[in-house]
Structure formats: C-alpha cells, structure tokens
Amino acid sequence: MIVRKLRLKKGWSQSQLAEMTGVTTRTIQRVEQGHRPSMETCKALASVFEVDLSLLQPEDEQMQDDTELKLDEQRVLLYAKRMKEFYEHLITYLILAAVFLFMFHGEPVVYIVFAGLGVGLVVHGLIAFEVISFMSPGWERRLAEKRLGRKL
Image 1 (cartoon, rainbow, N blue to C red):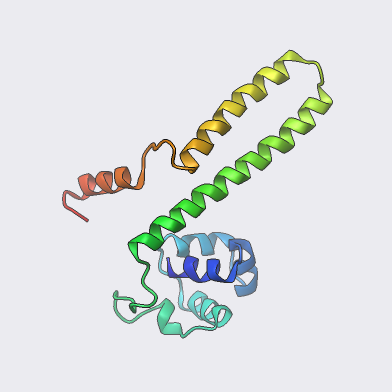
Image 2: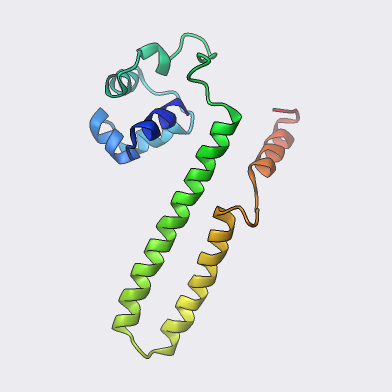
C-alpha cells in the first residue's frame, strides 16, 4: 500500500509508474495489492520515488510510523478507487451512448439497451457515493475473519 500512497501523492497512474520504473503495469498492480516486489523492482521504485530502499523493502514486517497507512487513509484510498471506477464507467457509458444513438437513431432496441445500462450506472453511482452499501469494507472484514477463524 505504500507504493499506492506514494504514487497517488505524485499524481501518477499505474501505467505511468510502470513506464518510469521499467516494469509492467501488472507488476505495479501486484505490488499495490500487497505482493512483495523483487529487489530490482524495489530499487526502481525507490529511485523513481526518490526514497530510501528500506522504505519499500523493510528488514522486518513493521513499517515506519510515517509510512504506515492508517485506517482512515485506507478508507479514503478505497473511496477514491470506487469514485475513479464510477467516473470511468460514466464516461464509457456516455461515449457508447453517443456513438450508438447516432448510428442507430430511431431504433427502439438501442433505447432499451441504454436504459438498462443507465440503471446499472445509477446503481454504481449510488454505491460509489456510499448512498447504498453492498459488500462494504465491514463485510469484507467479517468475511476475512470468518475465513481465518479469528479477529483481524
């Protein structure tokens, strides 16, 4: 998560960071999901972020206080991710709607399909803006605790 925090502070996308470090976007995604990067990847990330290598690959599992993601930061990052996904969905919907309505103007099936997709978009927006909550972080925590058989 520290890589995600540093990347977002710089305002870079995952693909931009991947390009700057010389690794694949998938590698950046894995690192941000908590997978342990190789030493070469750590060196490249440390160089790009201009931070000490030990920050990205600490000797022990304890991270330094100033780099550890706090619960509120984790929640905000999750919220930002949901909002980004919603806006990507919205933009995709608007572009497709414009193209298909222009190409198939007057076809009733196009209106029906985009009405259905519009309902999906509205539900996605309600979830992203936390008006409704399906499978919230609390649900994820309870599921993980059930699977582990203990509290996190």
